Every structure is written in structure tokens, then in C-alpha cells.
Amino acid sequence: MYESRHHPLLSRRQFLRRWLRHLLAAGLLIAASLGVGMAGYAYFEHLSWIDGFLNSSMLLGGMGPVDAPKTDGGKLFAGIYALYAGLVFIVGMAIAFAPVVHRLLHKFHLQDEKSS
Image (cartoon, rainbow, N blue to C red):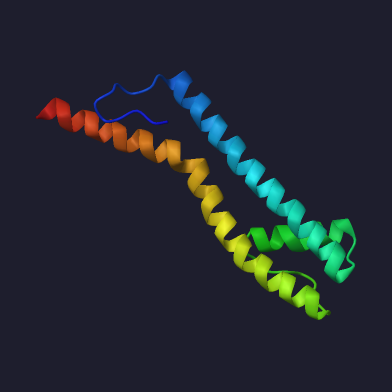
């Protein structure tokens, strides 16, 4: 997927295309996770979809839920979803910024090879 350090740096256009694909993948992961959270809050806590959206997005953003769960099923769902949401945030950011970090490291390797 990525070029090795022995290959030339991608053009700016190719890099932006790669970054856009990664941003799209991260966005799809977050959107799907948001949908799962909304459905879980609607099913277990009988919250409206907009309240489920609020609680799910707050958890995905690392803030915590707005409405405390009242049912045992809702508490289990909220706990599992909170653990999942923390990982999704980290993975989503890694997916989104991997091309940028790779390009920077690739640029440094190319500069090292030129100076050697």
C-alpha cells in the first residue's frame, strides 16, 4: 500500500488522494460506530434517536454519556460501548493520519540517503 524508502516520494496529488481515502475509511468507521451506539441506546434505554446520537457521539469523542443508563442491559451496553468507543477514536485517528506520518518519515529517509 505504501511505497518503501527506496521509492520516490509520491506526488502531492497522489498523496492527497491517498489521504482522502484514509479519511473516508476513518469517517466510515466512526459513522458505523455512531450508528451502532444510537441503535444500542434506542434498544436498551429506549432513548430517541437524537438522544442516542448525543450519547454515542459524546462517548466516541471521549466525553462520556449525557444520560446515565437506567436498565441493566443499558448499563452493560454503555460500558461495552464506552470501551469500544475509546478504541475506535484511537484507531480512527491512526487511520486518518497514517499517510501524513508516513510521508514525513519517508521524506526524512530520502534526505538521509541523499546526505550519505
